[in-house]
Length: 389
Image (cartoon, rainbow, N blue to C red; front, side, top):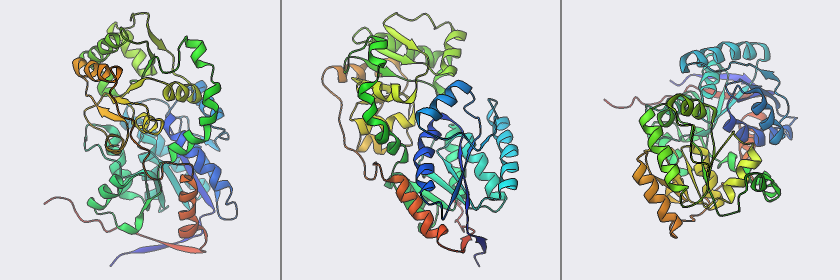
């Protein structure tokens, strides 16, 4: 028999963000939830997983996010240590605030850590961007996604691929909500500001006449041979067209350690950029080279060809419907696909369903109906079939 627990109406709702991509996802939800003050009292927690203080403040300001109600300040560490620190600090918040719901987004360590604390405290969990799968268990993000989904009560998905993944894993249909891509809602909100960006003049770039590159995944930047192959490809591409490379702090550190920092002057290696500056560059690039999941989605919306420097993706819809192509990490393949675009190739794709400016409205609408309009509601322990033999 399925066991259920009756819970009081969740006036206090904790929204968790830890790393840069989380803020783009939390911002619209937080704003929409404030419109339902008679149902919800949002409480914003920044774990400090993205620990650069200036960058953190800058992204909060750009997204017009309020100062966090609590800043945990966990900082950088190994996956195990960082996750443990977040859990210890977040448990104090949950004990103090007694939330009726915890909302986590994405797939970073903060996502899993805070979901685990909420689950053990008997607090319902909503996971925004649930169901994405790369099927590569060597990726820390994949572990975070799978485990967070197994203990969440509301699974908000971006696409039908995610819905199928959850069904295949035994998640009951009534816990799955196809609402669309909330990060794209942030993009749409700030898109009118992109044309007035001064980043093009600052970098001496002309719209449509450069390539934008990003690189940050440990599998790409922590291995010397892999990083060297990718950077060699970048240098070969920039012989054909200027390439601008906002380098992640982790990537800059590895480039220095491996002796790769002295690149050709046309390869514009810059510090990490603000959200608006980066979106402006992304929207007007000839094409984008990246290993980021979110950028695969943004380029699809902009109709800009994207070459993903990975062997897999948890966002196959960006390949099937969008502008994305997986190119792996071999120098020759990266260059080959880049030249194909420069010679007139590349697809513009289409924007997937519900990747619009109404996603947070759908999410909060579900929560109002399922949670906020009842003096009590039922959260049942999911009876998920065992996988395999």
